[in-house]
Amino acid sequence: MRRIDLGGEWRLRPINSSEAVTASIPGDIHSALLAAKKISDPYWGMNELDVQWVGREDWVYSRNFSVDADFLKKSSIFLNCDCLDTITKIYINGHEVGKTENMFLRYRFEVKPVIKTGLNEIAILFKSAEKQAITASKKLPYEMPYSIYPVQSPHRNLIRKAQCHSGWDWGCCLMVAGIYGDIYLGATSSGRIEYVYTEQRHFQEGCTVTVTAEFKSIKTGELIFMVRLGELRSKEVVPVVPGYNHFVAEFDLVDPKLWWPQGYGEQPLYELSVRVGSDEAKKKIGLRTVEIINKNDSIGKSMIIRVNGTDIFCKGANWIPLDALPQRQTRSGYNSILSSVVLAHMNMLRVWGGGQYEAEVFYDLCDEKGILVWQDLMFACALHPATPAFLENVEKEVRHQVKRLRDHPSIALWCGNNENLGALTEHEASRENRDRYLVDYDRLNEGVIGKTVARCDPGRPFWPSSPCGGEGDYSDCWHDDSRGNMHYWGVWHEGKSFDAYYDVHPRFCSEFGFQSFPSLDTIRSFTDESQFNVTAPVMEH
Image (cartoon, rainbow, N blue to C red; front, side, top):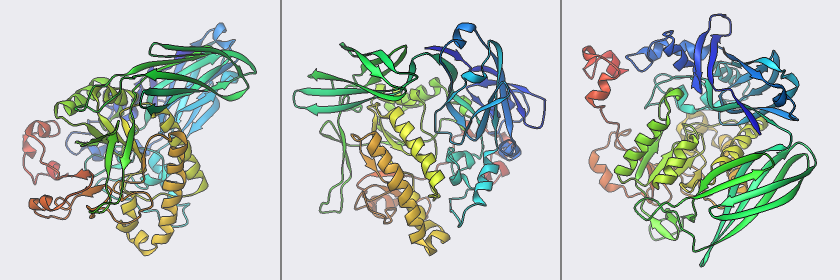
């Protein structure tokens, strides 16, 4: 398969202006405007308030690219977009070729009919996510509550975008938009690999690994299907039909090297490569078992994470996006923080549901360093509509992300959301009509998210919510330390004495703490000495 990389230098302008700035892709609009000195650093002082206009504008990214005659001869030319944030329309040579509505979906559009030999232009219109959310709210038959913070973009729960972009208690409100991950044109005359994933069956003497390749074929025929797992090889000729095909290879490993969390063993990884026709996919996998032990006992109900038959004492923290500006989320940044995690003797991170499904580099490094991942699905502190369109959008999202990530040995479990179960009793609307919102919650969390996870990754545990007592438990686990997992914020949010920590004994605590005062070095990074007072305007902000 041939590719034309569309990363690099683009042009960026407001939709109603011809004045453009240079933008680097992968990247976001705020970073491009900051580099062009069109806005001030949103981290400094109270500049956050001054840049809110950026998220309320519609923007256009554009660039030119060249295509040669051989590329154009291929039967299919498609546009791959790993991540467009969020609501867009895509044009090539003035023709609309696709649109997006979910930051967490990979989109692929057939574009051969509009491509020409020589110079071409691609333009992507990014609609204001804030305006789209407000429009969506006006179509609802009843209120859809969400938590509100000091600087807030409204109705974040109605669009599939990182929820923390709209502001949180720990971070700024920057409704960023942009092109993240890979964006490229692919050309093929046979087809393309959509996903590769494995299933493991462990037994006393070894492990059987089943490798599945999902292949989208252009035509009927035969192709060579080759798989390499470590030193093992498989090769066969397979029939293909137009549309989606599934090819399977199976390998028996005797005395395999098992992957362990750090502190419990090593982290051996097996190289896996799959080739179908002219397309190839590569990754590394680790061999291990993982389960959640959630059983009745003398205290209530346990919650233990067990890897390779060994109970793991999980030590770690919540993980939020590396930076509010996506362009600053770099490999070196990931490596620096995750190396600190190892040095702190942590063995688990919880990818928090108000952020994002992380880039591959994050999970690759967790695999290598032995850091378990509690993976929330990206829903947090809100209730969501259960309309057919919203549920369909979420089903696609979950299916893609689970298939994309399921081979990472570091991922210990999928969790349906962060504190959405608690939202049933947090807001006045949901308290007054709990059954209405509970039905919506169940349709989304159990009916779509849970079932999609089970279908796409049956070998990994699914935990309904954080906090939660377990499957089928819709009660308040914020203040119950006898079962399931707990979030304990009694000291910070309820003003209890620090001694209260001695009186709480969670079965598994996935959130607790007390917001600390920043170090002087950190304070210097966002203000000058005139604001070095806890009651100064910048410090209050």
